[in-house]
Amino acid sequence: MAFKAKSASEIKAADLAAALVRIADREGAPLRIGVDELRRGNPRLTPLALGQMFRKHREILDTTLAERGYALVDYAAQGTGLGMAFFLEAA
Image 1 (tube, rainbow, N blue to C red):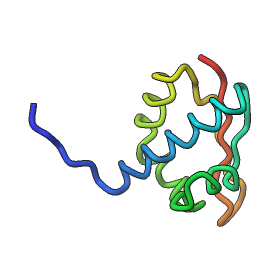
Image 2 (image 1 turned 90 degrees about the vertical axis):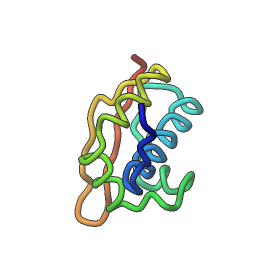
Image 3 (image 1 turned 60 degrees about the vertical axis):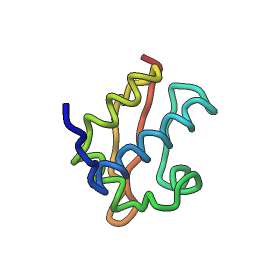
Image 4 (image 1 turned 180 degrees about the vertical axis):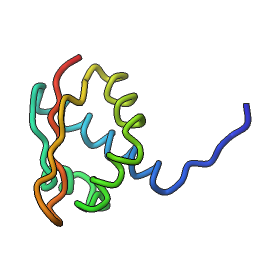
């Protein structure tokens, strides 16, 4: 199998998944994770990037969360320019 380089958006999606896992490990599940909390851990995760990465690379998020024992239950747009809120539970 040949190596396939990841795109910038795939890398950001992996960063988002890693940030969600770190917060869930620290806080415990179930929990709601908002934009501000995600940006504290990774300033590159802007509100616009969060929404785009979620919609474009949902499979990366689901796979990474499942590997760590979490499931993305729901998400909600918080308004124009405010990004997303993610709701996680233990799988």
